[in-house]
Amino acid sequence: MDTKILLSEDFCKMEAIRYVASRYGTTPENVLEHYFVQTGIVAPKNADNDGYELQSNELALFHDLGVQPTVIEIE
Image (cartoon, rainbow, N blue to C red; front, side, top):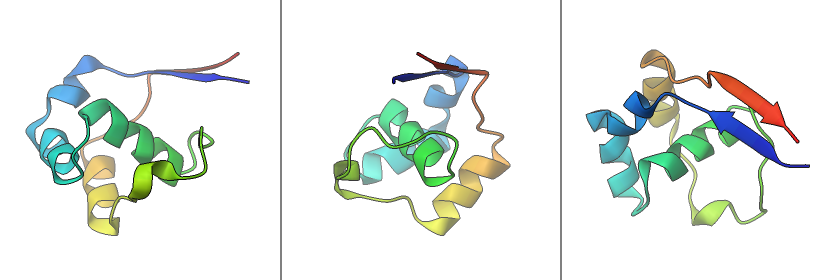
């Protein structure tokens, strides 16, 4: 079963999200996916989690920015 998350493009353009992504050497899309996995919104696709986890202050920042999916589709 695959999960498709629809999210406003604006989140990927936010400076704070781009900064967090750069800290982990990844893309804003990937770091947002980690946020959704770590907060339990979606199940992880793989077990290794790309070798990093977001810190509690980063999770709080994303929450405070209002990061949430517009639609979640499960196929």
